Amino acid sequence: MKNNLAYIIYTSVFIGTIIMLFIVYKDINNDFAFAFIIGFLIILLLSFIYFIVLVLYNMRKLKWLEIRKRVIKFVIYFIVISACTYLLKYIFQHSKIDIYDFGTPLGISVSLAFFDLIFSKEERES
Image (cartoon, rainbow, N blue to C red; front, side, top):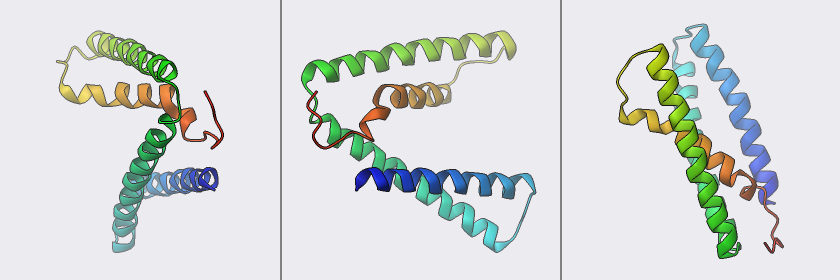
């Protein structure tokens, strides 16, 4: 059941993203477009919270060694992606590094290390 819910959420977020990009690209400025974007952002936030809870729920079934491997993988991905981001930003933009530059590497690292736990089966015994 929860796998079907995850697929429904992914599909609705994908379709909503396409519609939102169309609204922004065409610069549509009316009440419906504004309400759609606000609603989409709320759904995006709620789906993010749902997936975080689902990952934490599925992590409790893992053995300590598996959790440790995933955390180490997360840290390595985060360091490598952050270093690449800062290096490319330094080469091409010559701008200062600020705290907001941690968001993208953090999100990518979390998804690479823990994404499969969203679709984990109930009877998983790792």
